[in-house]
Length: 549
Image (cartoon, rainbow, N blue to C red):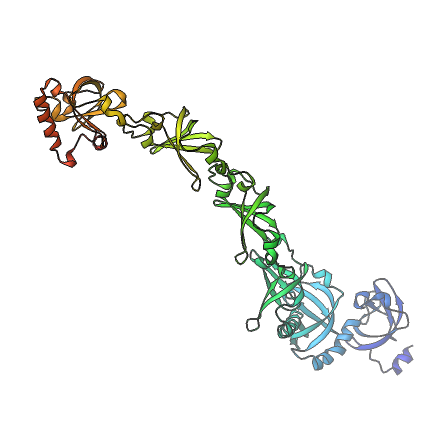
């Protein structure tokens, strides 16, 4: 053996590369005969697949140590390959070149890659989106770009991301060149936002806006899509300068509005689901992409509904009638009250003019009283139709809420859904026969009903008021009427004026004992008052300031 070693040209020294023969394969190491006095050992991890290593195979190894404590030669297959490959790699792989390699292990900050020598792949350079599980890449072979070589330290930095980006740029340019609106392309959902989803078209990202996802109502894109989902989309628009592509999903299906008139003719009964409630109405989905609006005024013929949510709920199934269609604006008007008979269609027959009706007072306002004739159908008595003779400032002076009363139908306005009623029309207007009740010169008895700065109103028979002007109270000068008269005081007065056309009666307390000549003189004085001072006019008198209460 010693003689053979002397004759061998192989140099057995640390750092030398020699060729050996595999003599034994163990689970974690391989024994190699390099012709030295003892066998050498190579770690099993230095072989791509130790199971593929066979006894008798030749292998180049680097002598790391001629003898360890067990007397074995410590060898390295990888370092031998590194020594042999380094010069080769430098010659074929300048910075910016491309090389293939196998991911060997996960190390701090990235991956260790075998490209003939060990090279470092930073985590940020693995992919466009750094993978979360680096261990899954171990054992895989990829192409890499050499981004940095340090000859002194003999290390190489790689990037897979740059190759991917370069490939995507080439694909993007190719896609933009060949893509046309109307194309159907396969893509993968890359990201989801509130306004839509970004779709990866294999090298080019396109935006699928939420409004182009479905003909129906969508609250959020996540209702239809998930990240990673494969979908077919329609190319809607291409901006090659800005490399932007608009995509559509609903365009793969026919627009339901194209045949809307034939599908939902005016007057047809339809069923749908309440999808949105707003102050002015309710949106009802008839089918995906087709919604109709039930305006708040179309919910009931008779009830005044403040807001739709008072009678409808979201997701409620409802029936309605098609009232109108605007295909261009994609609007359908619906009505729910049309499912029932309009009570106003029968009102003219049920409540003809001059007929008497009975009802309960439902509400009092400053201008009149509302009488419920039937469920949801009201009539109104205007304040001016309560009394023939008295000026009523508010209906509450003579009427009370919930009282049952009788009235006369004056008019029905079907278009505006109004029924006018009258209370005074139940009796004859006393002014038509005023000549039978009162004549100038008559002595009358009554009670003071109201005091004003200019005089006092006296309640007479037949529900008629007469006015005593302040000048007709006493022979003496009266500064304030309340100093001489009180409300509910009984008085005797003489009729000194009757104006049937203006519905006026003038009274005089001081003239109760006057002669005929004195009455004529007093009447002449009243007639000489200016129109603006004609305080006998009951209507103007009641409008004046009240001093008596």
